[in-house]
Every structure is written in structure tokens, then in C-alpha cells.
Image 1 (cartoon, rainbow, N blue to C red):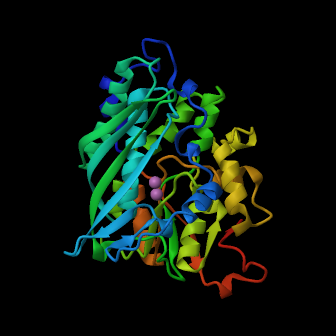
Image 2 (image 1 turned 90 degrees about the vertical axis):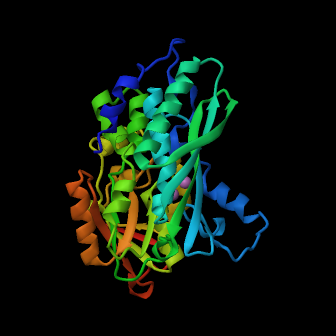
Length: 369
Ligand code: CO
Ligand code: CO
């Protein structure tokens, strides 16, 4: 925990604005669970014309976290954007979460965020002070990230949404793609899973504020913490776990790296009550979309309980980094992060396609229990 809830408390309003409207009442799907289905997205993107440019080192055909443009001096320009509807009622906290999530993709590429632009959709039915609180929350996390908020754009919309377009720089020798994991690497996850399920449960009135705080504290923890803990370690590949769930992002890493990722279900850090809430059916629609799309590429051991596999497919908002690196470095990374108060863990390994065992040749990810 980096303590940002405390630092923001004085500026935060209550859970309602003067009109008495709760933010989450205005939205259909919250946070990264509001992402388009991965199948639909793949279809639309596949039909777009490809513009080739040798200076575009990472483009959108790579399913990576951000695009990277070669500046010609050993550095790359990293650009990314993310915005979504609120999953909490407190507008300042929502702003913090959306900004933390949007900044994350730059660190996931090994870069440092430098400049951010606000993207705000805002309904007329809410008081203008709510918009101010959302932007203040976003600015608070950008300040903590060392990233300048330099402008933005706002439009009227019946459903509130907020996020950032972020630019940063990366030393190209430190560039971290998601498709460069190596056989034998250990996989580290830097945050616990469960934000989609816990925010869904809270919205349904079945999880109290203390239960929700586990998720919100995690969602406002910058992945800067994870990126800094990686310094001096030999990271081979990295991505952040967001709307496509641990299973989806692990599939993407495995397929882009041409190997199989084995996950030890019992080692995956989970938020308190996430499995309980999953057992009660408090599962966001995005989790079912993830299971539909990525499920056929995931070989789940029969002994993995359904509630646990639900958490593995749960869309994460502002989730942690998934890093592939040699075993020894992985242990060091986990040690550093636990010292910083993050529930990081080695959750599995990268295996060769042939060594993945019988009948598993269609699997990108194998979950063992
Ligand atoms: Co990402
Ligand atoms: Co993103």
C-alpha cells in the first residue's frame, strides 16, 4: 500500500453528490469489465488496414499493452489510452483508479509515463463538483506517478466515464513486450485477483465497504511499484492483467511467446472474499465473455474449484503486472514487492510447446491444482 487513500481523504466528497445520484447506478458494466468482448474486438481489429512503418516497433497487431515508436536515439515513445465507467461511488476514488489503470500500460512496456491527457464523459444529471472530484483523483495519481497532466477532452454522455491518454518514454534496451517470455521462466503476478467480482458484489449490496476496500486499495496502487522492483532484474516479458483476466493475458503472453504457461492455481494471490462472492454468483458479465473466448485455450485441471476458476477469468481493473523472468530473479522480485506490501507471488512457469504433455497441444495456459 502506498497510502494514497489517506492522502486523498481531505479532498474527497461523500459517496453522493448534491443531486443524490450514485455514480455506479448510472452504469451498466464497470471498470475494465466494460471492455468490448475480446472476440468482437479481434474481429474488428483484424479487418482494419495495416499501416506499416519501420519505426513502429510495437503496433496493435501484437496484442501488447501500448504502442512503441522508435525515436531513433535509443529511446521509444510509448503511447496508450484507457477509460471506463465507474466501479465505485466516490468520484475522487474513481478518478484515482482510472488514472492508475491508464498509466499502467506504460510501465508494462518497461517505460516511464511522462504526459497524460484527461478523457472525461459526463452526464448533465450530476453536479459539476463531481467532475472536479474525478479529475482531482486522476491528477493525484499522475502526481504520484511523476506524470504531467497536460490537457484533455470532455463530452456529455448519459454514462460517466473517465481515463487518460498517456505518453511516456522507454529505453529501447529495456523494452518489455508480452511476447518474449522464454521456456523455463517463472511467472510473477504482482497484485491479487478479484476486483471485478468484489466491485460487482458491492454494487449488489452483498459486500461491505471494508470488503470493497481490499479491491480499491489494490486498484490505486501504481504499477510503478512493480516496475521499480524490476530494476536490475532480467525480465524477459511483461504485461499488466486487466479486462481480459489473468487467463486471457496469460494466453496472450503464451501465444505471442510461442510457449505454454503453466499456472499453479493454489499459488495465485486472491483478494479476501473473492471466492466467496464468486460462489454466490456475483460474477461480472466480462468474466463469462473471457471464459467463452479464452476458455478453449485454457486447460483447467479437474480439481480446480469453479469459484477459483471464476476468479482466474475475472476481468481486473488496474490489475498487477505479469512478469516472465528467470526463477532466481522471480524470487527476488517477489521478495522486494512483499517488502513494499504487495501480495506478489510466483504463480507458474513457462514451458515448451512439446514438453507440455499429452493432449494439451491446443492449450496456451494449463492450470494445475
Ligand atoms: Co495492458
Ligand atoms: Co490498456
